[in-house]
Length: 90
Image 1: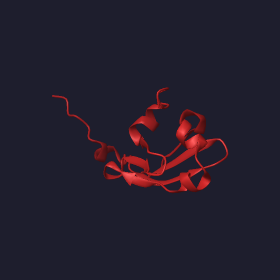
Image 2 (image 1 turned 45 degrees about the horizontal axis):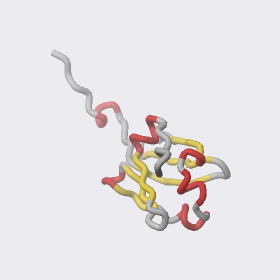
Image 3 (image 1 turned 90 degrees about the horizontal axis):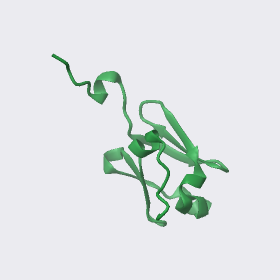
Image 4 (image 1 turned 45 degrees about the vertical axis):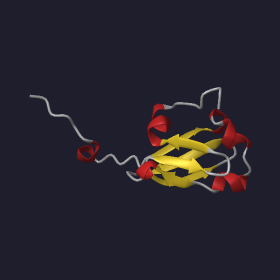
């Protein structure tokens, strides 16, 4: 009989710890020690936001998402880990 492995059993915690930016990237640190770095160009709202707007983020979805209220942008750690850029309609 196969047992389904839960994330907690393998030490994976995909909740957001911190969010920061450099000139060309969005950088998200996860609770389990991983860091996700993706091109800022994938997320036009963030790309065109001011540094102050980018800095004003909050955890969403029990820590599995990031919300920027001033620019109405929402990202999930699942989407970031999959490497999913924003849809063109965004």
